[in-house]
Image (cartoon, rainbow, N blue to C red; front, side, top):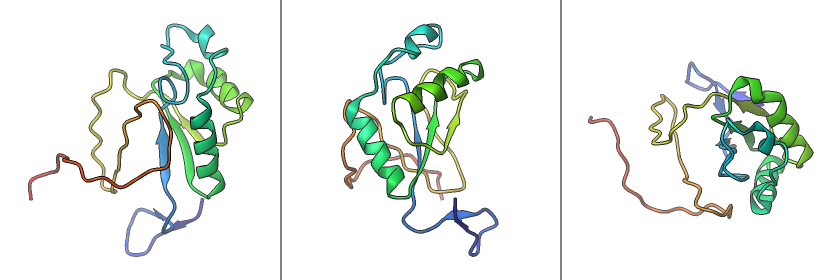
Length: 133
């Protein structure tokens, strides 16, 4: 991963490179709970997710799967991703369960809610919560 430091203490990705953090269950495959790991081995990827994510990878973007699966499910998860043809750089396990996420960071964060189909991204004006100046 090529990083630039510019005037920042923290490194920044080069211009135009996106650091995608992508959920697994219910986003790139069926919604399989941690309590049913046997299903994680046999579920099928959503074809549009596979094609889109691999295109992003090939375009030079960073692909990180960020999941609520627990550390004991790492081998099952990474094996499933590879066996189903997903290209990725990393996997972060242990995302809090339950949804209703609100991410606070010193870097710009953009979020896209998955609603059933991976397609090209478009720009859209939306209402967001921010800190009071």
